[in-house]
Length: 128
Image (cartoon, rainbow, N blue to C red; front, side, top):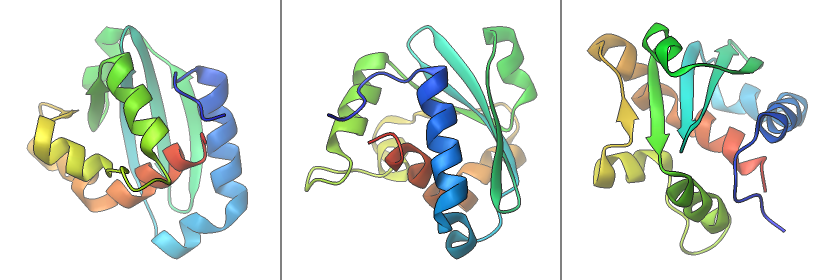
């Protein structure tokens, strides 16, 4: 059964699975620290080179320290996660183009989303 709610433990397991899969080597180096906002839950995810090095719960005030945040209501995250691996699947980049889900004050740091979005999708695919 697919995960439909993002929890800290699930994100950490997904990061470990992604690190072990070899997928990050194929996708290329990623250096970014971004937020995942799912309803009232907020997490910081850090990628250094070919590894997801940390996933932590954070406060709303800590979001401004990150490159950007992917911000969707919990229901939208559930819909995105359920659709992964199906014909209805949309990438985070497609969702951002449709609904502007990527938030951030610094335009240069926000470019890390566009630069590495396939890596972020790979992380969330590991939640399935």
